Amino acid sequence: MLSRETPLRGHTLFQSASAADLCREIRDHLGADCVVAPGGRVDASASRYDLPGGELWYLETQTPLEVHVPHGAFIRTQIQRAGCGTTYVNQQPCEVNEQQSCISPAEAVLEFGAGFQQLVWRVGYDVLVRKLVALTGAPVPRRLTFAPAIQRNEPESKAFVAILNCILANIDHASVLAPPFVLAELEEALIVSMLFNFSHNMRELLEQEVLDAGSWQVKRVEEYIEAHLDAPFDIERIAEVTGISTRSIYRAFKRSRGYSPMAFARQRRLQRARQMLEEAETNQTVTSVAFVCGFNDVGHFSREFSKAFGEAPSAVLGKRPR
Image (tube, rainbow, N blue to C red):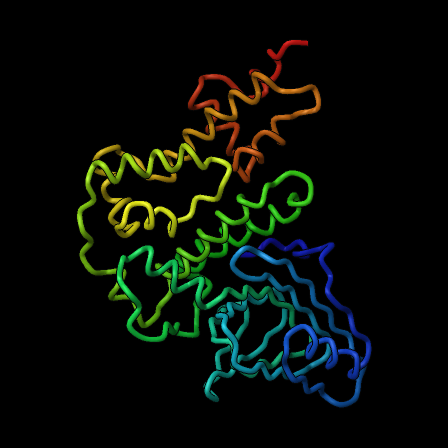
């Protein structure tokens, strides 16, 4: 389940106490029309955080309302935190509640019940298609559409939410520690999880047999990763530099190296972290080095570092010249 802490705190976009203000805010920020239930107190708020490929929204309303969103170039994933709502696509309802999340195209009617709280990830449609092409090495022959209902107790949904929780945790650190590529890599993992774990009309592309990659393509990926440790690990760039799908590259890595390209990048980042700790300035900490080197969880970084080098990162930092 999602962390029970209020997400996106410190990134409030609006808070409305009147129907007129609320409808104006929704029109200005979402380009959508709003219908507020008559009578009663109006109390609604929204927070937003921009990610490299999309946006995270946290929406909360004590007032029942209806939002009519026009056509747009994004896919929306809604995950309930309290209360319930319903999303209508082509007049077909999809409940958003404790048991079920919802994926929908931009054009939809969103009904929010009183006390409804939800986290919404809006990702660009073109972003999803480019990742799908990079994974499969095949063009997308028709418009990508998802089955709307996601059962929250399924392992696939839990895996997706686990990545989302990592993103939320890193947003708390983004202004101080986490470089942008940490969030970029986590969002890419979220996109890949979405494409592999949820039902859509392009599954046959992900299930078809992949081509074999050559040893030179594996070597090229390693050289590219070495030269771009400060940049996000991007499956589109991996496909571009090799001319083959990333699924083929991953299989070739597993066969010839015994690990994935991402594991190779992690090894090199650990080596870089060790060098930084050995040469650290007095104001640097294990936490700051971990984030700079692309590790979003300091505890996980410490365990991986100790496993790789036989000593804790704090021990290496303690050896620096005074």
